[in-house]
Amino acid sequence: MTEAKAQPQENTNVYRDTRLQKVEDLRAMGVNPYPYNFRKTHDAVELQKKYEGLETGQETQDQVSVAGRVMSIRNSGMFIDLLDTSGRIQIFSHKDNLSEQQQEVIKLLDLGDIIGVTGLIRRTPRGELTINASDVQILCKSLQTLPEKYHGLHDVEVRYRQRYVDLIMNEETRVTLRNRFQIIQALRSYLLDHGFLEVETPMLHVIPGGAAAKPFITHHNALDMELYLRIAPELFLKRLVVGGLAERVFEVNRCFRNEGISTRHNPEFTMIELYQAFADYHDMMDLTEAIFEHVAQTVFGTTTFEYEGKEISLKRPWVRKSMTELVKDHTGVDFLAIHDLAEAQKAAQGLGVDVSQSNSWGKVVLAVFEEKVENTLVQPTHVIDLPLDISPLAKVHRDDPRLTERYESFINTWEVANAFSELTDPVDQRARLEAQVADREAGDDEAHLMDEDFITALEYGLPPTGGLGIGIDRMAMLMTGSASIRDVIAFPTMRKKA
Image (cartoon, rainbow, N blue to C red; front, side):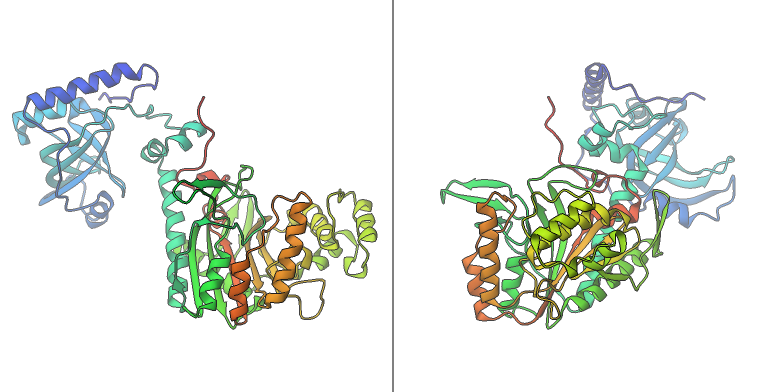
């Protein structure tokens, strides 16, 4: 048996011209190569399950209709492998069962064409579940050639730029992205089941806020003003809690940060951010663990994952340790015993950490943590009690005024969540933002701007509130075993082609 092979990508204009001619040939036969609909009765996998007990060589009188893409043509069209969104099924198109016109249609088929097939189910002597076609309809004539079947689409650049081709050719990509969207669905359903209200907040901000990051800037022509793409929804979500819309709110949100691109960073990314009135950061730690465990069990049926040779368990409870305690564990230096900035800088330099740009005690602690500790946090760990200097939106720690009730959760050395006992004192919040403005004027272009309306909202009264943000992309990377953030984003940001 001979099998039609997909053509190589070069000289695609020649193959496209041939396919265009076939479009005209179909029309000349009175066949519309781009019809309006098709009534299918089953998906491929649904049929595979329904007839898994059908014996080899057995035929049925069960008529079904399927639709999908032609991935293989053998014996001049007698055997066709059809791929739909669920999987594959074999089509047997014998001339004894088809009209003359349909036989001519089959002669004009190419790999990548989308067809609809009606026929009777049987299992071939070789054990393949097959549809004996009695009707074959062209549903979409493809003008582009697919990558060569035996090698597939492996060029990473092409896979990301032409994700639609990647999805057609690579089952792994289809599974990864479906899992990603099922992760979001499971996360959303968990919160809805636990009394949270899903809300929406603006993506265009007059003042960027909610996170320390460099924003994207755009211009609104009618208002003749600069606007910023959202870097975080935090300040608007808090406004909703102030207003009493609900005690528990969340948003699955797209955020934009004008920063570098790496295997863990994309300028456009997805977070889920939530706020719960009358809760603190201890409650948020419990909620973080419950969310990860629920999503893992719901989508994958397990809480244990292997990532690049490391086995990671998401099962509760997770380790909870303060940033200063972790630094002490790994370096022997107790920064809580150091109160002077110069002394802290000297201690960090003694550890080989460059803190020349760290102008506060808290920034020195953070620099040492990032260099000496962060890459050791493989198993889920809540790094708690972060310094006040790097946490402008979190409440002062009830036991140490240099710290805040804030934590970052790490898995596989990545930060995957960030949460606070939210700052509710408007006077304290103003002072913190003023300090951020001073940092910005000193050259820190990621520092917060002053948001007077947010301060006004706090003056109306924000109840004690716990807030939590989880990075969906990194969660998906971990649970799907993906090496790059681009593998779990359907259409990642790419450099413009030359």
